[in-house]
Image (cartoon, rainbow, N blue to C red):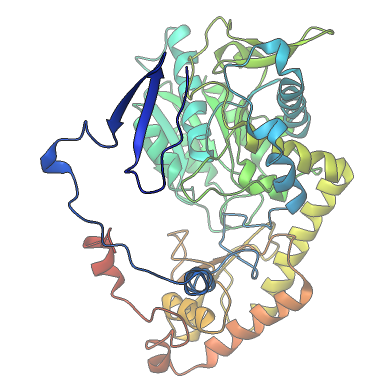
Length: 472
């Protein structure tokens, strides 16, 4: 086969030669005439104008690399650059997912060790890395519970999943997607599970009780062992939503608390990118009896080599292509190795310290419901200031920082849900507190006009939600 270089003045051609005969095929010849552009409206723009345009666009947005990003329950900690650099190495990023096992032993070792790390951290007996996001891992965990009850001949009766009213929104959504009926129970006056309501809701129809600990109010459920006993006595399973896992690393674990299934949010606890719609990872861990229900493959080590095991007796099957988001696994593996057990514990301690410091500074102006001691996040109410949470959030934006989650959880009126994480300085915490305290004193009518200093001003958010503009 021979190729001839086209002259610069020739049209773009695809040229394939057989012997000495050249066959010229015009680019786009297979495209119907009605679909072919007659001309292209391409502007002539200097490089410096293009660079300045996109740099300006990047500066119009906010990122965790710019400042603290205290979205409650999202755990928006800084993504360490060493992990990003490792994941971009071509030795990892260019590996084909169908490469033979013997040629990717290093990659399989990373996955195996991450499984083992997560087992140790959570006190679970087995882990699958396959789910592609936290909510995906949550849905996968519910499918495991569903298959468990099916194998035991109880699925037809056990159709209910119990969820506290302070739960993350994905919990009822995942349960409903898996075909269960959702039973919501109220919180007690101390912001924890209402034990009387739980007892009343539990029955032989219960398949699962879903809860995160600490809960979305930043409060640790100190009756969790009693809860586990009640759930198991009813023949149901106990599910741990790992969204708030950053608050307990090195202090306790889902396994010690009596949970059967847990999903991990690698982007929260182990500082992998949130993705913004791109690749994520939400591994699932289970206690021993449920190991055979995990999605496949799982990585195993026989003392000589690493293997992908697709043969689990009751597996729910694959929940994603191949074995999940490997580059996310790689980042989390690097993060855990970098910090070690003591470092992960210190991260938790600092995250909890930062939260309680911020709560203390805000307590004079904002109402802080329920128990005063918080874990990873604090929910404050702006109703004591006479100002709306939404307006407080706009004031924070106007002062160059990102607002917290607003109006969630729903059980707190005018809620602002703040999670500073461990990756912020005391100076950032003080600046954030100062801005929020200033907002509490600002003229309420003036707040309604903010933000004034951002690239986009106040918008009609109700109309934007109902009539989204999906194109430029």
